[in-house]
Every structure is written in C-alpha cells, then in structure tokens.
Image (cartoon, rainbow, N blue to C red; front, side, top):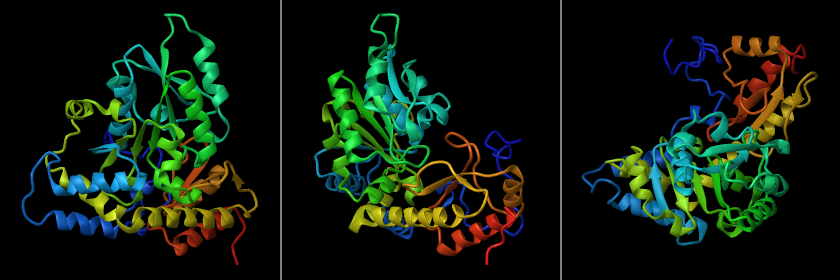
Length: 364
C-alpha cells in the first residue's frame, strides 16, 4: 500500500466514476476557471523569482483590499504549513495553543504544529458544534498558572469548523476579548474562510482583525485554487521575520508567481465569494434532500458547505458500491458530505436519490 493511500477509508473508484464529482472533500475539485486563466497569464514570459514578481505583489494587495487593512501577506504551499508555521511564530517551545478537541490542527496535521514550534503543546478544549467558548478559554488559562504547566499563549479558531459550523462575528469578538484579557494571541485556521464569509454575508474584516484575530491562514485550495494558502498577519508586528521562518520551513517557492497568480484571478470582482456561496448553496440543497429520508440523522447544523449525517453501515457500503466517495471519519463521527465550487444540482440530486434507495426509500 502506498504511504499516501486512502484505501483504508475509501473504496477504489469503479470504472464508471473516474470523472464523477464526489462529496468526500472540496480538495477533490479541480481548478476554478478564473484561477486557471490567471495561472496561464503568469506563464507568459519571465518574471523575478522568490516572490519579487508583479503577480505576488498584486495578490497581496488584493488581500489587503479584501480585508480593508494594511496587513502582511505570505504565500505558502498548503494549510499544514500555514497553520504550523504561523503558530510556531506566535509561540515559544514552552507555550501552549488552546484549540477545540476536533480542530484540524489536532486531528489532521500529523503533529506538525508541535513539531515546527519545537514542542509547544496543543491544549484541547470542548465546545458544542465544534466551537470554542470564552468561558472554556478562561478556564483553561486559569486552570494552572505554575511553571510546570505549558503556559497558554495562543487561541486557535477553525473557521468554518471541522463539523461545518461557523463562528459569528459576535462569537469571534467575544473570544478575541477574552484572549486580549489574558494576553493571548488569536490564530484563525481559515481553510474554508471563504465559505464562512459567504454564509455570514459580512465583510471579511468583521470576523478577523476587527474581532481580535492576529493572524489568519486564508485558504484558497478548497475554493478553487490549485495549490497555495495565504498567511495574513493583521498584527503586523508579529509578522517580523516570518519570511525567514517560511524559508526555513521549505515554503519559499522559487516561482512564487504560480502560487500567487490564481489568487489574483479569484479575488477580482468577488469571484472567491461567489464560488464559496455556490458550494454553500449546494450543501443547503443536500441537507434539504437527505434530512427527510427516513433513518438519516443530521449530526450538526448545516452552516457552510458540508452536511454531516449518521448512516447505517449497509447504506454506506451501498453508496460506495454505486461509486460515490465520501469520508466517514471527519469531525466527531458520522459521514461528511462536502460540496465544492463545481458541485452541481444534478450531482446532489443523484447522490440523494441513491441514498434514499440505499435506505430503502426510493425517491419519486
């Protein structure tokens, strides 16, 4: 078995499904046309290396425009690097990071945050629907204050959360205020930040720097970019020498324009939000269709571009047998149905019909 194989959790696609759109992850989707066009434009001729090119400058400026603030922007290859290096930059090795017990940095980063921070510990906190609370954060900070305890230094929020829920502006502000009270920095894992902004209908600033977020790992890959996330420091003092950390961590791309250019295509004219809103709408349709199927249990509120359902094993196997791919190990259990920028209504209706049949309730 390959070291990157998912055969332990997903069936091998059948001959009938090599080009089918699936619901396992928004990482499955291809490159959005606007990102592809910008990438092609960046491939015309030569440009300076290591980020000293007009594409990287333009992408960073568009991010500053989107957030309406003079922030520092760094591009890295993926979310693991974005989260791990930014957290390492905020912590000393004797510090701790407060995060939800199903946070992505805990469940799906292979220990990278602790590794790159030379041992900073993740302290796991509970919270309904995948979200931290100010009270939970304060309890963790005050639990112990002796020198034998890894001193809390950062609060990490996942937006949208690993179970598909969204922190409201009021919730982020309350957490930001609690963090400030105790001298903590606020990090936001925004792999699906676009979906959160689209769902809330707010300006990006309202759930980031205006609410107390110091650094955002702004995800593009799950929203139609081929590779590359943006680490955005709203607290510009904290960004000092992050470029050195990114280089040391193997994240300085020599041909940086090919990481940055797709951001230019996506950030123009609000394309990034339109793609995210479409994915959210497809998840809303999925929720409406599958929630009325007898025996299907919705596990969490549908707020972004995913639907979490509890399904019996025979139904799961039947869907796998029909060639559908979806995860059944994300978050707190159950099956995750993730919609993407390119999911169609026909895709959703076809899946829902097959699920109804698998549950013994054929659709009309």
